[in-house]
Image (cartoon, rainbow, N blue to C red; front, top):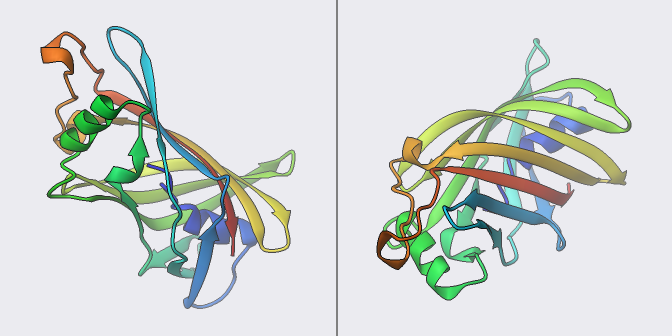
Length: 194
C-alpha cells in the first residue's frame, strides 16, 4: 500500500497553500516506500509496494478555519503491486484483499490541518477515506512533512488498521496452521515533487 499518499493533502498543508481551489499534480519519486506490516503466530511479515505511480492530479482549497479541503483527489494503489517476498504469501494477500473484484486500494484525502512544527518537520493531521475490498472508512491520519528542496517534500506516516473493519478475513496460510493478526500497520515514507 505504497502510496497511502494522502500526501497530496499533506503536501499542500505543508507548503502553506492559501488560494482558492485549483487543479495541480504531484509526482511520487523513486525511493519512496509504502509498507504493510503485520504479525502471525509464527513471525512478523512485511509487504512493500512495487512499481511506479503516474502523476497524481489533485484539487485543494483553504477555508477560513485554515483547514485544507480536497476534491477530485485520490490515490489508487494496485493490490497486485504489493509484494511480501513470497509468492504464496502474495497470493493469500491478494485473495484476502479481493484483488480480482477490487484491484485497487484507494486513498482519498478529505481535509488536513497543520500542527506546530518541530525540528524542521511539520506535523499534519488529516482525514482520509480508505477503500479496501469495496469497503470505505474515514480515518484520521497523522503525518510529518519536511521540505527537502524546491517543490520537493518528504512525507512520513504510520497508521494501524484492523482488517476486519474492512470486512477482510485475515489470511490463514498452510490450511490455517498460520494465523495472521487482524491488525496491520501501514507505513509511508514518500518523496514527493509538487
